[in-house]
Image 1: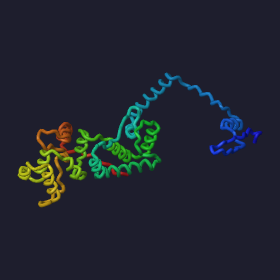
Image 2: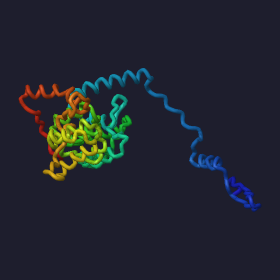
Image 3: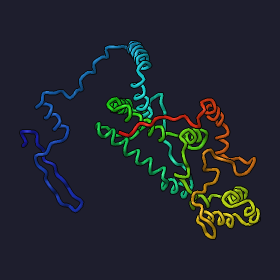
Image 4: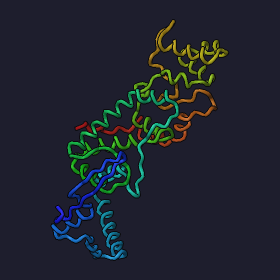
Length: 309
């Protein structure tokens, strides 16, 4: 009403129509009336002065940090869980990234996505997600250094058994393992991985295989040296067909389990003196593991793997 401050607004439209809007008030007037009803002032409350100065806060926080580090150093079970939480979320001092396939080759990406290894990782991802979801927490590893998220993951890990925490740790390490280089070769060797169970020659492999020296060495490996010598002058395409025929058994005994030296554990070089990334990586670190095995008198140190809960 007019007594309540209502006003009449006249609207003139483009077609000449005139419309009267009665009893409206502006937003500012509406806020003033609401404030009057609640008895609150429009002015925000003055901020409360901190009880510590900046230097004093720094002093207290650093002493608390020192006590926390000393305590943590004597609590390995708690430290393990906090380390896993850091690897999953990151912090100002932890910068960890999950491996992402950045290959420019679409066929390479498709081959990896369809691999047995990728399927196993997805199964593990679902298992880890279930462990966190059972405690009301998302297992998504958002590595943005969010301190609250870190503590949320830490709290969930504290509620897990040692076996469950080790599952999370193993998956987190697997997810952040850098591709290529010496670490992959060390893992394959120590784990005793059978690459033949995870990979077999596919169309993407043969399409990328171009070096005739390496191809001829594969012919000799899957066939014989005499066969390799007889087709040494043939094109790479013809020699790759020979390899394919030997695998499928086209005109000979099939050999589906054959794998080139590059995909064995440890990897081997096909062309003497030529650069070979997997073989070069293994050659660089093999002494670290083979010498220890000789000392221990075992091929590989055996670790008991806990059963999944």
